[in-house]
Amino acid sequence: MATKIKKRNPHKQSAPAPPRRQFLVSGELTQRQRSMIMESERQTVMDFVTIALGRMGFRASKFQKFRETLAEVYLDYAELIAELKEDDPQLWEVFGKIDRELYLYVGKDLFEPWDKRHG
Image 1 (cartoon, one colour):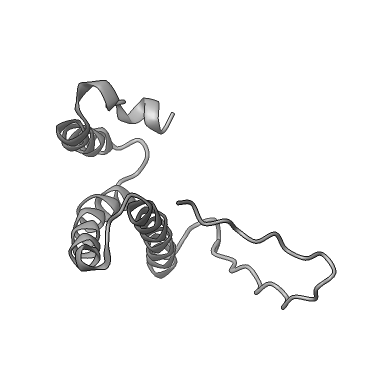
Image 2: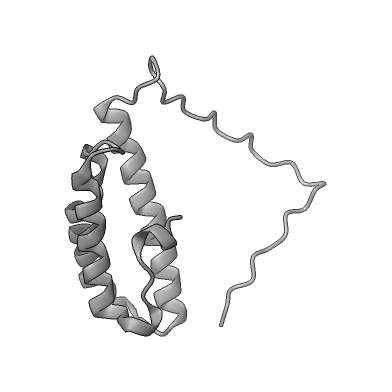
């Protein structure tokens, strides 16, 4: 059952939003900034996937193993992608590796190649 999200009362005072972090330093991200962004993205993905699995009946006893496995997959792929430049031919090799692994799990009918998924 989907959880309903409460609508915000426009008359109620809320705490001010925290200031947005400014990550650009001379047009480049530092390694620390890249790591912070990757960790934030990883945690957001973890939150969404955990909610989706919970809605599908996945229960607490399985979540620790799931978190460990997702962290491994994330480290395997995300850090490698982050290290490569956009025009690096090795980047497409990584995308191909991800595609092959996804294909194993979702099969021919549900699979879409990287460039279509991320197009």
